[in-house]
Structures are given as structure tokens and as C-alpha cells.
Length: 233
Image (cartoon, rainbow, N blue to C red; front, side, top):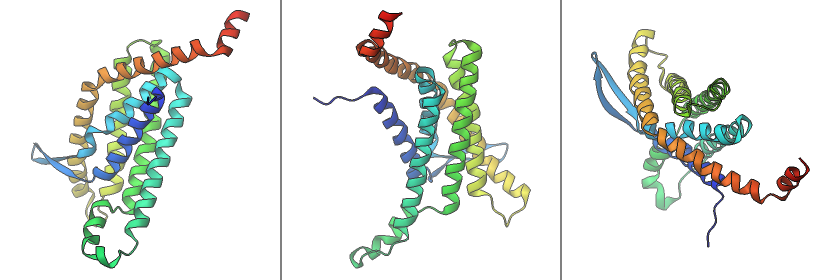
């Protein structure tokens, strides 16, 4: 019978969201227009709220230190993935696969600039998300998790969207005004949709906390050290 540690399951979802967003997030789809500004969103919009919600769940159950460790783990995954992608797409293809090499590089290829944008956005946004959630948790004394989760997500995702889009798409050969129009057209809808996904996913935050707390309580009951401490007390 297969047995999974519940925290490992949470980490698995976290790593899945990171890898899938990195590999598939380059696709941008139209999202209508606002006051004449064409709007677009990346398909990663459906995954990024999962990252922020996961760190909030971990803060809620295990505390800030464990959540920060998870963020550093995620940063390591992004860095390794970007580095390996740059390495393999730079290698020459065997004769049999020359015809498909351009397509392979087009799908999986990334630039150093995009890699740096992903790393910077992820690190800054996730650290701030954990910080905001932790501070609100202390002020609200464990109450209103739905509010803490969404506010920290909204701020974190706005920072993530802004940092990534600016670093990845700013065109140095265009004017500041032209850049601003294009970048805002991506940032605003991307952030709004991510906020909506975060709100819709709020029940999953509660489910995740209940999922981990149940496992944590079982582990504490079965820990002989914990029983000895209680008896001494």
C-alpha cells in the first residue's frame, strides 16, 4: 500500500505549480481590452495563486520558518530548471532530430533575461507574501484566515506580476510611454485574474490547513517524546 506524508503532498503541489508555470507560462492569450488598452494574460495565471496559497497554508500550520524554507526550495527549483533549460537548448541535436530541434528550442527555450525575471519575481513576491501573512496572523490572533490569505496573495501577486513583466518585457529601444502602455496591458489583467482565482480558491486554503493539521496532530500523539513531556509537565 502506498503511503504519502501529507506535507510531502503539499510540497509536491507547490513544485508542480512552479514547474508548470515556468514551462507553460510563456503562452499569452487575449483578454479583451480596457479603455482602448489591449489586455492579455499568461496561462500561468491559473497556477500562481496556488503558490501563494500554499505558503500561507504552511505558515498557518508550521510557522514562518518552514514557509521560508519552502520558498527557498522553490527558488532552487526555478534556478535549476532555468539553468538546465539554457544548457540543453544550447546543445546540438543528433542528426536524426535536427529537423525538430528548432521546434524543441522554441517550446522549451528561455533566455537569461526571462530566467532572471522569473527568479526575481518569485523570490521578492513570495518573501513579501509570507511576511504580510505572518504579520496579519499575529495581529488577528489566528482569526480571519480567508482575509489574511487573500490580502497577502493580492499584494504578493501584484509584485510578482509587476517584477516579472517589467524585467522580461521592457523594450529598451522604445519610449517609457510606449513601454508603460504595453506593460500595464499585461500586468493589470494578469493581476486581476490572479486575484479572482485566489478568491475562488480560498476554500482550498482551509482544506489544506485542515489536511496538514490532522496529520500534525496524529504525529504529535504518536511521538513518545511528546508524551514524556506531557507526563513531566
